[in-house]
Length: 259
Ligand code: GLP
Image 1 (cartoon, rainbow, N blue to C red):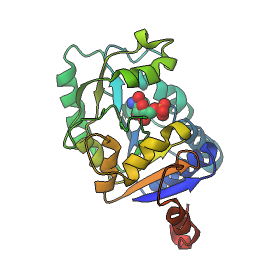
Image 2: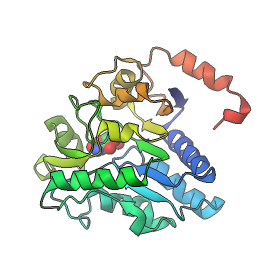
Image 3: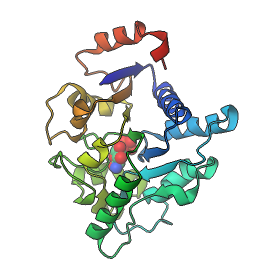
Image 4: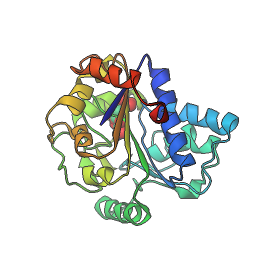
């Protein structure tokens, strides 16, 4: 795993956008997209690169990590809508190639299996963007999720519903159930790139990067992955014990591997 520490959130976002730009330039045809506030700077910089540097998403398929059960794709807080608003509407990514679980499906379990099959058939995902919850979740894989899980129906913890209440004008509006890619589904991507910024993420980042691999911190599956990159700002890096070493690696990185 590589840990890249940037001075601030904006710089971290630009760094992840640069990694994605390079992956597409080198031929990645399938992207895994995350929602939440963490990747917003990434998407803003991808839009800038599309407009100013010729970055093209033509021919790229995109798969979302998760979706709220009960929200139609037209709902402003459905993840399908968020990704359209933040990225798809501003670049040449074909909306028909953006795949999300259908939160309104009458049988969410069956919809989860359908989505997993579609993703597996199109995969592997070349690069998967990830955020991290304050409790260490990725996608909506709450602590306790099986490390071997596939896309399925999950129940959110009250902590996560409280965290996301800001998007719904209060916790009452936050759905209780979601469809999320499982940890094994996520782990099948060729490259995992996690972005975390701000002091409230410091504990989860330390657990994911330096803690034991355990279902209690789902993001720790990055330690088992052959190609994982964690991009954090100084605030989110605050509790990393090996921080001086991560800085040292960046200082002495061979130019060909730079960001
Ligand atoms: C959300 C999403 C995750 C996201 C995480 C952190 O609930 N399901 O994909 O990474 O929680 O959100 P944020 O980036 O807003 O802190």
